Amino acid sequence: EYRALFEKGKKWVDENLFNGEYYYQRIDLKDKKILEEYQEEDSLVGSTLQAYWSSEHHEIKYQVAQGCGIDQVLAQWHANISDLGQIYNKNQTQKALRSILKYNFKRSMQDFFNPCRIFCLNTEAGLIICEYPKDKPAIPVPYAEETMNGFEYQAACHMIQEGMISEGLEIVKAVRDRFDGEKRNPWNEFECGSNYARSMASYALLLALSGFEFDMAKGHIGFSPKINQENFYCFWSLNTGWGSFEIQENKIRFTVKWGHICLNSFACSVFKTKQIETITVGDEKVSFAVKDGCVRFESAIDIKVNEALCAIVK
Image (cartoon, rainbow, N blue to C red; front, side, top):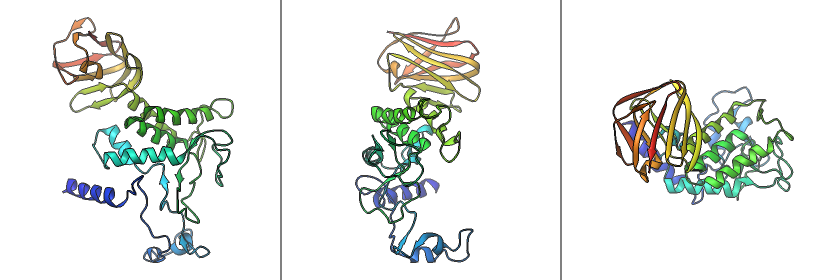
């Protein structure tokens, strides 16, 4: 029942809210009746009409409408992290990301007008919240011209997930160049306030660039690096432990620095192109079988603190 509801909604969104370049908000800004049905009682900012209707422009205020929003396919980014499958049509999602790069990414803010908060200025680069290639509302969605680090990291990470690696990294570099320790504090990527939590979306870059996958119920972990495939090193962290993963020439090493982890299977993109000679945990050889780049252990292995799973390949 829930799957059928999802499929129905997915089909409608893909068919009705994609304009050929990106997903948009389907709304008639001139239709005052949209607001009138919510007129039952006043809110803290007055009635719905007072808050959202511009009598000067005869238009609904604060809407994305035909704009290209920075977070229009955020749900797909989140689904990718959790391995939930496609929320939107894949080709349309990739087109939307390319449109976000095309319209929202300003490689210099020098000639761009921003009436809101100045998080990015002069020759600095940034990804703005919402750009209007055409039909910009008189009073658009709030913060449309701002750059906000958390949104930028999310969009950049999603691009990396979808294969736009250099494009995603260019956006990440734009953020970090702004917070370089000279112009701004590198440890305080502020938005609405100092040390704003939304920048923690940047943690997903670690998952995307390492091609990290984990299934606690199945006891499975895997890595498929998107950069530096021949010489790769990264950090990983889970509920029972944390450690490092590295690829060096013919050796793959998965180390537990704290805690432990119990595994039934271990995947690595290297296993798809190279043959595994041996796998050890500590000093003990491990029996295994390989299929489609995934190692399945004969029996579950428990890797303890300061132990490593090592695979030698050729």
